[in-house]
Image (cartoon, rainbow, N blue to C red):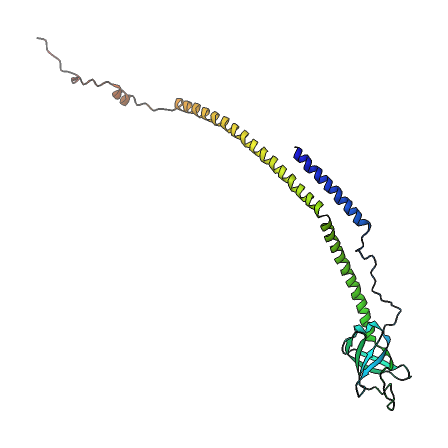
Length: 260
């Protein structure tokens, strides 16, 4: 009984510590993202940006452009870009993205002279104004995907919070689990003791029942013998009841003897 009280005390203590730990975590949960933001501004035109030519081939058909716009990382090979030279008021030239690096991208220009005069030398360092609707769509898609990533990050942080909570409260959880099984062991021991006592009681009752059944069977045997029906044949029975003493017996009726 004292052992059971001790185990119950341990359970109550562990429950109180666990409740206190949970209340402390609920007050300040730094892992939950309360605001989802993709850094996307609907009023801003992401299709326009500037870049500067850093390198070119001899034919000026392939240009390497550096840009401070970090959204150029969303370019893919084959994307169409339109650009003009900043120092000239001319038509747009068309280029196709060939490669993208950090702060750089390479484009292929089929006809550069639609926005540049034939007589002028196209110098390195020329500032270009770019416009790309595909980049605008890529930025919108990236903003949506960023929201998905934020939700995934939130889920991972929640899982990490649960794991950390289990690790931090491992000792309390261990005491609770051990106490739970200790209670089950005590209950099983009680059930075992009760079952054994029931078996002893049942054995005692069965012994009494055995004696009573034997007594009643004996009484039934006596009554069965008393109420047995027998068939008597008088002629046959009488013949067998006569005593055969071995003495000679004359024939009957005997002949009459005449008087002398």
